[in-house]
Image: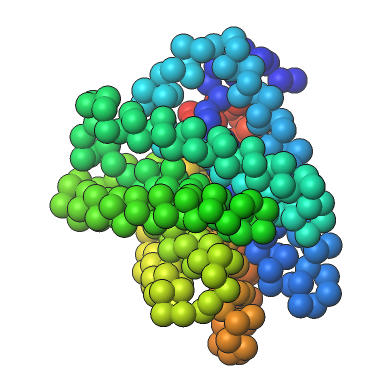
Length: 319
């Protein structure tokens, strides 16, 4: 039985679960559509993911209404602040997932995600730039999330939004990706290691270049040198992190583990797009391999998250 008193400890980072599952739906659709069953498999994931988003949104809405001090505490936290855009990112991912099945719904979700993304980007960047309470040690790969959301808007936005709107978000996201990449690389190389709980967020390094590739491809239709640079950057970062797999599998489970799912989904979709554009069998084989890895990651995460919910209820951050 759900105890609404637990809502006070319900974290905004729970929306990263929706990001991972919606990313899986997009990856399934992209990779299996050529077999004639892609939309069906994707829809099997999209529907429950959409319902999950509604449940999480309702729970966090109750938290906002009944425990505003707890929400303000999350907003003031140097790490948790970066997870607020996961709400907007979830909306945009669901827009992309629903596009083949319900274009009108997809457009509504895209507009809502776009507006919320802009508001949260302005709010988070204002906090970073003008609050004056942040240190280099606070920086972690989750800080990419506000940036990722902007680039992501342009992926379904190439179809669902006016062209200049998509270019606006793409430009903002691309600029701050480059700047934050330098900041975060300096932090992880020259400062103490990230806490174990945040180690899975390293995978977020993959998402910006993979999404930049997909957005640029959608906006221009060209597989030109810039598109190839963004794709191969994402692929290199994927290989780099996969080499560290023994380090990641030894980590105790936490909600931040979902940070590994969405980036793997983005590089899977990007690789499917590379195969569609080039026809090279290498990319087809690689995309199937990445999809298999993604299915394994999501399966493990769903199993372990379910166990945590049974033990801790809505206090997922305490796991």
